Amino acid sequence: MSSKSKSVARSAARLGAVQALYQREMENTPLPLLLDEFHQHRLGRPIEEEPIAPAEMTFFDDVVKGALARAEEIDVLLESKLASGWTLARLDRTMKQILRCGTYELLARHDVPVGTVISEYLDVAHAFFDPKEAKFANGVLDAVAKAVRPSASR
Image 1 (cartoon, rainbow, N blue to C red):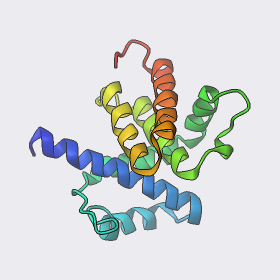
Image 2 (cartoon, rainbow, N blue to C red; image 1 turned 180 degrees about the horizontal axis):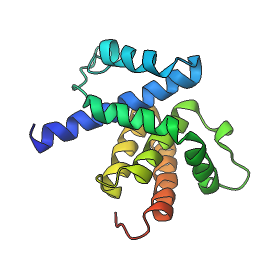
Image 3 (cartoon, rainbow, N blue to C red; image 1 turned 120 degrees about the vertical axis):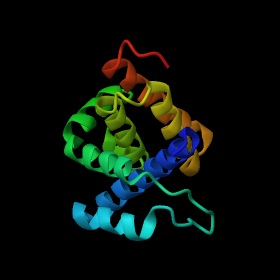
Image 4 (cartoon, rainbow, N blue to C red; image 1 turned 90 degrees about the vertical axis):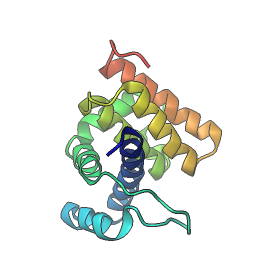
């Protein structure tokens, strides 16, 4: 797989992971069923008639499973980076999943550069939100990155 096609496959996996975690939060779908549904019916399928690139399944699985396994740690870290008076409960559910996936990668996927993680989840945020809200995601993930990978540069 070329580096460009691997990058596209990972981008699709990140979008899928955000969608899977959103579905999990909304419906409490058991993890094995959730992964199977996305593997069989969602990943790489068009959304609103827009074609989607095939996703890197192992990367998708890692982000979904990792974000769920480390959910408490991730949520505590995210809450510490929100403005005073804000909680994760106040955030849009899709935004929460974007931040959770990005935070998981920053914590656990040291093979992925900080700038790539932030840029990729900023792209996902732009797919769902206006520029102001996407900028919010950028700010929170940047603060998380400074806390968990202080020596890494963007």
